[in-house]
Length: 283
Image 1 (tube, rainbow, N blue to C red):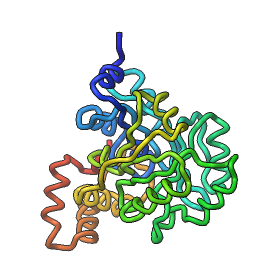
Image 2 (image 1 turned 135 degrees about the horizontal axis):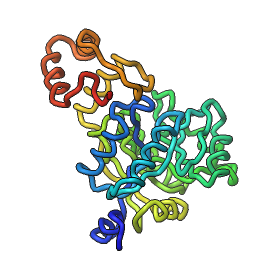
Image 3 (image 1 turned 45 degrees about the horizontal axis):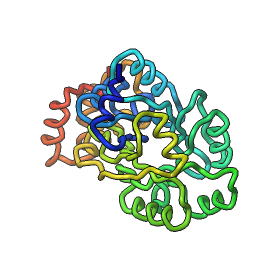
Image 4 (image 1 turned 90 degrees about the horizontal axis):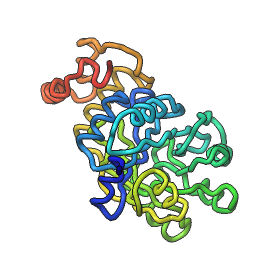
């Protein structure tokens, strides 16, 4: 009997994966459960990677839930590691990689546990977590420490403008696998940027990255994703919020005022109410 992922795969010539997203285990808005539910009912993805900042707890939970239920997609345990030189997506992990290490050491640790390392949203000149060209050139001179891929389409603000640069440099100089990821911090952004690959499922994806047979496609966050994420961040900061908590009406009002001004408060309030959030995604 075919799995749900295989049945879906038979309907397409290639697979679709979103390899970059966040939950309430780091600075995301949606819980693991909400994230999985959105992917199941609102996307055509057959592989996803949960890549919370500097933790794999949410990803492990997502994988466990996916294995116990008949989701039409598979879950990769990932982590967006904060290296000294910028963010690196690490996939197929069993152990967390600590932040604050060099990018070389981070890649080495990912490979040591059979994982993959992908440079996230590179070449953004104003984003402090973006790996810059001198660092990538340094990696190019170290064949044993090459990353497996470069995110050539990042769906968030970090990818606007710089994604085109990443694509051009990857195709002309680096020649590593190209990946796309939404960098979703809200469930509704998941799948806006994706990785297309031959075959279906996590092992086919892994081989496609190693064989540099992937491509990136999609677009960027819509305005409502920024509205939801910024309101959440102003209320909570960037701390993980997977523990039960409640956003008070006064805190939510302050977040709206600080972010959008008086003219936009009503529209933002309507959006938040439509998402049923007295603490969107917080349970």
